[in-house]
Length: 113
Length: 143
Image 1 (tube, rainbow over the protein chains, first blue to last red):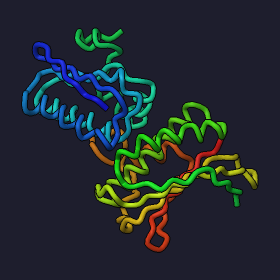
Image 2: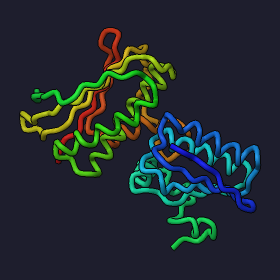
Image 3: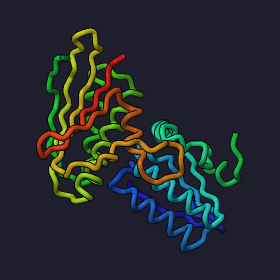
């Protein structure tokens, strides 16, 4: 898995590629919490277009990000979920708790289709 | 009793880096037995979650402990459908009595989802303690 950050005004976009599992979900969690809790970025967006697989530890990292965003009144947004990632989020019954868009343009504008 | 045919036996160490490799073999095995794409993804998730639980809870994150996984084809005797049986074995301590109590899904918690995923994905998920070995048996039938 690789994770890199693009920083725009008041927004960080994380581009993630590869599988998110127990081997690398701590890195996702660390990156999210640093951006939200330490840098106080008001909007953090996860680009998951390159993520073909996510397991419960990956979902847990996203949950940590969501909780941190609520604590600091920031927005935490996901976009580009693969079929597999969407299925796992549905299975967790957490899908509706996240702000999710199809693509980056919608994620930035905050408007779905 | 269903008839079994051993398909694959893997001996692993409890290092999370093995998860990716194991996932890579599960779906082709399930597909070869006749499972559809969605079931293949579900079985892969269940195996990944079972291994993750062993690494995190049975071995407390130690990277060098033994895990065995066996994949058996169930031939579907006695009116049962054919299916795939997956048995994980580890040498960790006996789990606490509440370790297999499922926590409600849909709550904003960062833990406890793995068991829920395994039970949602498979038809049977049973843990047993045999001597000093933990044994997790999971079965999914072909429909």
